[in-house]
Image 1 (cartoon, one colour):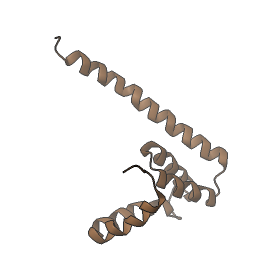
Image 2 (cartoon, helix red, strand yellow; image 1 turned 30 degrees about the horizontal axis):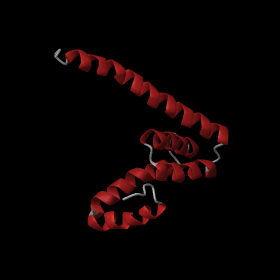
Image 3 (cartoon, one colour; image 1 turned 180 degrees about the horizontal axis):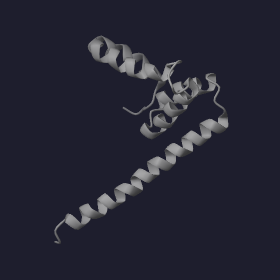
Length: 112
């Protein structure tokens, strides 16, 4: 297979729903919490958090959906940019923090 992130793949979610309807419904229920309008966290911020998470998980489909949701909920391009860069900083921070773990793992390998 030579193509990744083909938007037509989203149509294949029907196959998932048909094969595992209960699990699919549970997953969709989780996704629906982003769209809650009357939560303590306003919808715009829910969408911006979802955009940041989509960047952390690198889900291009989530990015597309939640960038649109954020814009429709009133987010500005500046707000969008900031949450993306916060996500990037945290992703880089996690790599750096795991560097200490890698050093410990290295030291645990017996000398040859």
